[in-house]
Image 1: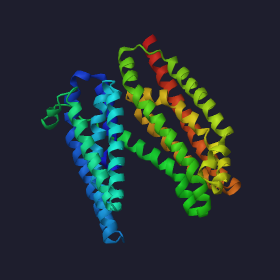
Image 2: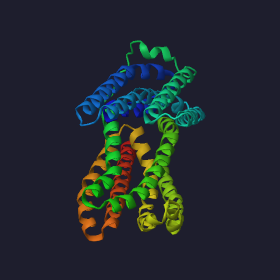
Image 3: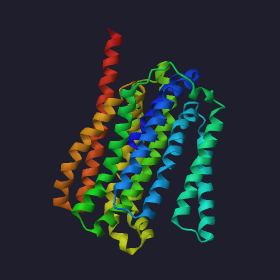
Image 4: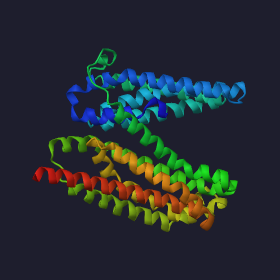
Length: 360
């Protein structure tokens, strides 16, 4: 996924929000790069699978699933069109359509006695149909035919690489806990930790959706200089308190929540009770991340994630030896706190520098 350069989608959203009239030209400038990077990612995935000790049936499943990468990349590439124009209802309806069409086709396939291969096949078909509708409805906002014509727009590979690498490192940080426990803990410990961390990941998706939803507005207000600097810190505090209150309720009812997964997972409530407080910290980073990315300072986001991740790895070893499973939870909380502090400091320093420059 990293090689398909997901950072292109983020760059399109920011640049398109700044200049809606020229968005067709901006997308045209990035289209070939997106296609080439996706094809390279697809070929590499197939080659790695070929040289792995998989049987022929498993290889066919991986091969079929890999082709969905092309259409998921198209969907990701066209999504900024709706986001930049602040027409999120299109995205909602298209996502519902994709989930619903896949579910109905998968149920039909299983009902008639087909297996996993055909379920993955209908998933691919659903992605193809959905990407077509993305293409069709995108033409309502930009000249989609211009994607295939030459463009004089200069591609910012630096920003694309930074956004892609940041996304990759965040994914690594989310999965590092389970990978660490898979190596150094028991299968039972991995199972207990897996459900709480899965809940956190789902809530992180909500946070990311919130960030994407507010990104066009933030970019436009920064361009017009209508967003007071102190608002970033106020909004961050508001999200921290609101998400913190919700996290407190979840923590208080953690045992009841884990009981839905079965009695064998009840001990995991101690993990969820503490780990849930990483959610308000993650939500509080939204205003700072939006500001830094919208003003061309996305490398500060990359640095905060990288530095926090570098600290998290030795902390996992240290805390796990002292506190067991809860030690991994503490290292995750520490990672999120450090990341928030660095983002807050970066935002403050840039705003302070801008204010001092304007006074001079």
